[in-house]
Image (cartoon, rainbow, N blue to C red):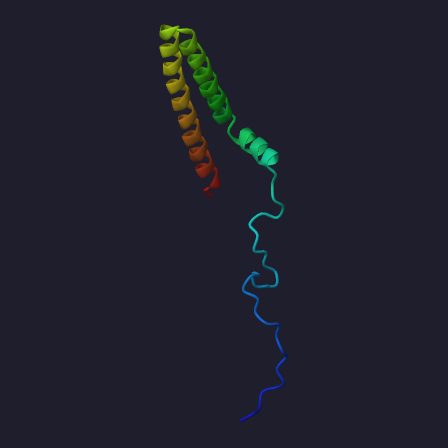
Amino acid sequence: MATPGPMTPEAPFEPSQPPVIEGFNPSVYSNPESFKEKFLRKTRENPMVPIGCLGTAAALTYGLYCFHRGQSQRSQLMMRTRIAAQGFTVAAILAGLAVSALKSRP
């Protein structure tokens, strides 16, 4: 039986580092996005979600202001408006998910 050739000593395995595989990049993203870049990209993909969030926040803020001033009728109206704006936001999120799922299909 032939004796194997001389073995080259390998570097010791370092468990804190990912393994080095030629041609493979363990990172999913080539360059990480900042918060602002990601926010702008997501807003361009589905602009209705930020609009719904702003509408929800505005209705909530104005409703609390009216409640503080003692305008209970207007406060109730704004709380109902807030619920409608939240529903719009959830519908926009679901619609955006559906559109992106349809885009990813070949």
